[in-house]
Image (cartoon, rainbow, N blue to C red; front, side):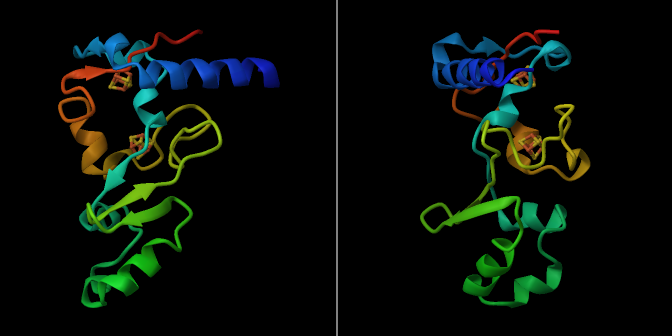
Length: 137
Ligand code: SF4
Ligand code: SF4
């Protein structure tokens, strides 16, 4: 895909994600024909997710919160900690796709993915609706 086409696709994805009125009521099986836009949204996660993902180990829980945050932020897939929500945010690539999404648009940590991903779209910006976008090819 040319750079121009990539930018167009990235722009379309961002537009679609922002306009919740264009989201579709989620139905089982939809993911199979979708571009996977839910993996292009910021994902907030808890410490328990980081342990399941292998970013932190159980023994890190014995450290102070400050040290846990420092340890978690060493991982390239974790970008920040928000004190008001007590949650971490997964890193996104320049096209806004998740750090853990591979070139074939597959989650590289699917079995260990955070609860936020497991609960989408039941829990999300528009519960039970998602940013379905039909795959171009
Ligand atoms: S945006 Fe909706 S249909 Fe697409 S992969 Fe995510 S949950 Fe599935
Ligand atoms: S962790 Fe996996 S399922 Fe969750 S947003 Fe990233 S690639 Fe998608």
